[in-house]
Image (tube, rainbow, N blue to C red; front, top):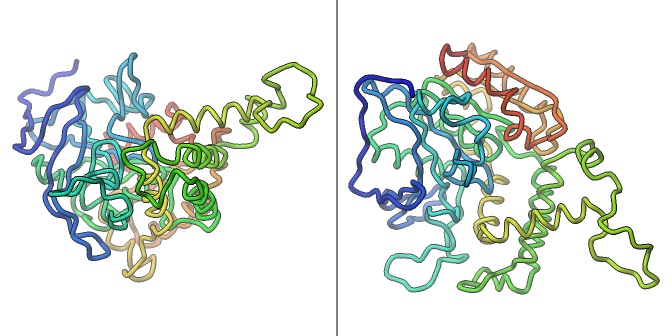
Length: 380
């Protein structure tokens, strides 16, 4: 382990240590972007590494749609970004103090649709107010305030996490040294909204959804599984599906005389598996709320032109895009980068090609890791 001299151990009266290092902070009432007041908001989070004596090594990671605070883990329980974050990894937790929280509206410990409002005995369901990316960021800022974090070395994340990164740079421009948004956009594209629409319809068309009031039952498991399958198709590429599955059959029996619509091909089995796996760990209402937060994301909303909005950013910016990304087209990120440069912002862009498509920011960590480490150490 690398030494850093005297270290500061963070303590807050609201945090509660729970199994696997998950902690909770009550950030109080939160005024949402739509004007609603959400009472007694709880944020689940994890930290990795130690805050040094200078308090200049804190890094905030923002997770994607179905992510959580468990950004890096162990052999027994891997984290969702183990290839990038951890001891002696590209983002070295022996050197940096990493914070990751479950987003507002999520279902992994933070206040969301499945939470029970104060003084009541049943979950919010669809009574939960609409959540935006800006709401998520304001909740994260309240958490950092409680933790005594006054400045961040970096904010980074991909997909929905990248949306949060951009909002951080606009809402709190002097709070961080650098921003690293990956596989994301300044506003959601019509194609991405279309995929999300079909996913929502799959959930809401399941009779078990019951208008969002399915608690404490399992809810629309079939609809959520289909929504996840739709997502998985958009996250990857045709090239990867061809290489991994082709037209391989799961069974070698000859075709039946009677028509059978159940999974036969390997790719069908894969999509079914991914859907069933998500159902075991995610709440359908949270899925709906977070999809809508992505759809409505636009850094220019109620602010002005793109140039006016980006002019507020003070941090250095490293933009990372994937050429084959179907949801977040790399051309949009190039436009964002060019606008930043035209405003004389200190910015750099990395693009790369990968058969993993959108999910490449999670998988291709040996491609993105070196430049992330370089920017953390030396700047853009």
